Amino acid sequence: MKKSLFNIMELSGILFCMAATVFLRSIYSMTGEGTIGILFGSVNMSIWEQVKPIILSYILYGALELMCAKPYFRQFVTAKALGLYLAVFIYIALARILPSDFNAPITLVSLAVGFILSKALTLKSGNIAGFFSVACFMLLLIFVMYFSFTAFPPKMNLFMDSQSGMYGIIPDSVDMGAVYLNVKE
Image 1: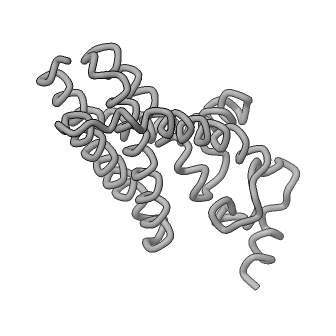
Image 2: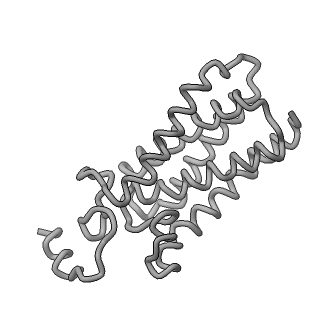
């Protein structure tokens, strides 16, 4: 493993993923609300839809790190899975506490915590590679949630759009004024 390159990539990953997250959050409107935007972007302002770009950018950057720095595979995958789950958990917890005006700082903090944890666990002298199969299951589970919850969101506050009070992909034919008046009652 190239430790110096890995250290640099882990720290620069915070900024790269932050920039990618900002881009991915707006890709839905940039693609004209197309399928690519639905798969990779945020279709509304719910907490889950704001987490989706964090998940995608974190995983893609992890794949880049794996190819460039060549860390020990099982240790790295396990550390990245734990870092990803912690980043998602931190984002959800902070997004529930703080108003949506703090979306960018919340994203930055959650990414930083996730990357710091994954770096510490990857470089740790202890062996966490024994949890590789659990980490693979965790990654499979997050992929299933990633691709399912936009089209079929559970009726929970985590998936509700804070602006319209609706879930998932919001149809074009909805009168947002009526929805707004209904939500404010």
